[in-house]
Amino acid sequence: MTEIIYHDAVYPLQPDETVLDALLRNGVDVPYACKTGVCQSCMMKAAAGEPPSSSQRGLKPTRRAQGYFLACQCKPDGRLIVGDAGEVIAARLMEKTPLNARVIRLRFEPESRVDWAAGQFVSLIRGDGESRSYSIASAPVRDGFIEMHVQRVEGGAISPWLHEEAEPGERIRLRGPYGDCFYLSGEPERPLLLACTGTGLAPIYGVLRDALALGHSGPIHLLHGGLDESGLYLVDELLDLAGRYSNLSYTRCVLNGASKPGLVVGDIGELLLQTAPSFSGWRVYLCGAPDLVRLMQKKVFLHGATSQDIHADAFIPKQV
Amino acid sequence: MPNLYEQLGGDAAVDQAVEIFYRKVLTDDRISRFFDDVDMDTQIAKQKAFLTMAFGGPNHYSGLDMRQGHKHLVERGLTDEHVDAVIELLGESLQELNVPAELIAQVAAIAEGARKDVLNR
Image (tube, rainbow over all chains, first blue to last red; front, side):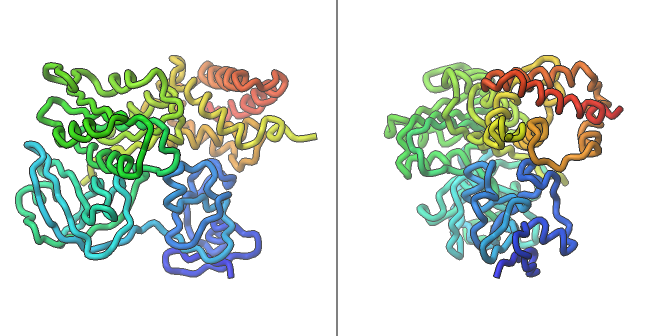
């Protein structure tokens, strides 16, 4: 029986019918435009069941790996559960460590097993229902904990509470995972560019540790940018990693301050272009301040990376 | 006789062309400002839709979609010279992919057909 389950309702498919047509035929209001697999307006995610690979054409490899597909091109072979609500798990705060004057590291122990990837992000939901998104800096399966780097946002709903009030033992809920900023195994020889600002290092650190653990053999260039040196963190750990892995280079970029070995003064958007004459063939991950991420995304694309190989995660502040 | 879309190489050709075409669009002083504040991934999906249409490929875009999609740009000063630039860059992109001149002319003619809708005239 070919059928789809969407928002808990079952819709049988007629022969040769697409997921989009079946939903529209049943009066379900879903976004779409071109109906030819090009505009990606009708992109959906399979929560269970395999979407046919023909419905994943043109999607980024990280999206395909998560089960995203284009509803207008999808004629499933069997039952497909459609949805992107994410799963909700309970977790307990294990430890809280300052990383610099404004950023703390939190480690949560999940109360059920999750296969979330390092670099994806989740919603952290407090007991009263208030929530904010944070990136995963650990590999939950391998490490057994979920690590986040949280910067204190003045007047914020969650970060001041995490900084000042939440203590080890505190229980919260996590919903996710979201985002396509994660390491792809396969093609371990391809060069990686990892560029981030501020706590954009959290997902980047996750991607980096995954790449190293999974035996990435190509060069890895990590750039971490901040206004000045006090905005950077995990410097000793990253210097240590760069010392142990000969294919890893680590550059700190600050706008203000004096340059010294490993620390460059300048705009990270300009400095990253000096990493290589061309980013053709590279995989690129960009995380942090939204304006800078979008700018770096364009620069890296114009510097030779294909759009499919650029994974950007702009940290957009929650609108309240 | 294969149709234009098939002669150009279908969706694989669109994927190749959009990477070249969008680089040209982003660096062309005449039109790059219209693309300053848009999300790159969204924009590339739209460029693919446009190229698929210009290649004579399957599409369900109506003149109305084209009008609505460009209305805010017309208000920001989008005129004939910008449409000229886009068609020119499209031609240059296809030249780089060694597409024969007579096929480029056919693509340009299809793109030309969208001019009135794009400019909301």
